[in-house]
Image 1 (cartoon, rainbow, N blue to C red):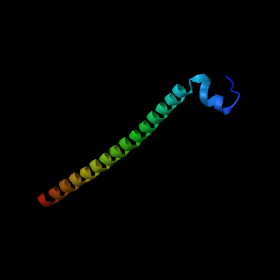
Image 2 (cartoon, rainbow, N blue to C red):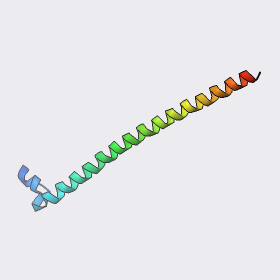
Image 3 (cartoon, one colour):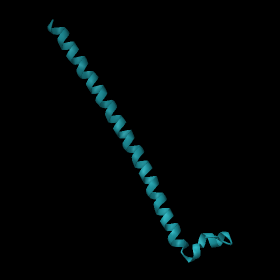
Image 4 (cartoon, helix red, strand yellow):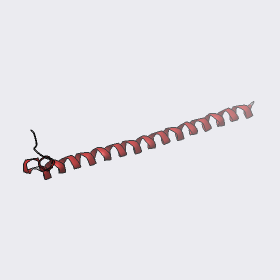
Length: 70
């Protein structure tokens, strides 16, 4: 489909409102997905780091208990 002018392009043969609304909603959904993915990744990495710290504390406690039993 070829357009004679920019206004014809934006009007999309009379369906411009629906076409651009669909593009806008799709763009918002993609942006929301990207933001949600970043937040979830940040949450998972933080939980993983907390778990690693917890495991290190457990290991240190076990090592200290074994040292005091000797």
